[in-house]
Image 1 (cartoon, rainbow, N blue to C red):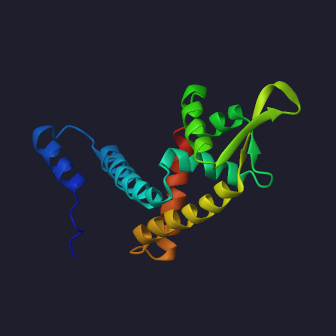
Image 2: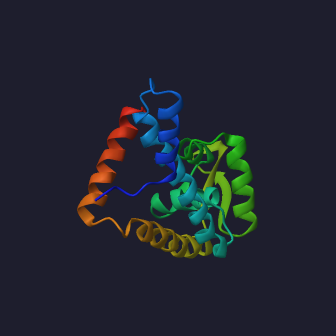
Length: 165
């Protein structure tokens, strides 16, 4: 039985025709990783849209939610976790604060610092949104059995660690 062809296979075949000297093994992997990331990113945006948040805003709320009660971190901790500049973080925090999903307050341990805390409304929203996002991800993995999905996760973990991420 022949393996189904995908768009990356067509690209690899084209390179083999015009540059048979190239080893395209890495392109076969990363071409698929990039396409999958883009496809799933679009699907995740659609999953979060009914909640009035983007993927980036979801990431902020989810990071606060994972920090456990009282769901509070400094803007610097959020920036470091999400690999964002403080300027990029400020814009997200402004929008989420206006929506009543989080609040900023003075840090009682650092007079110059702030704390960012998930509000009750933000907690309810992120708990619903994470379920919606997981449903989309689970659907995408549905054609792989549990063992193959586990193997894929392990291989991607190994690749990610080897890339220094």
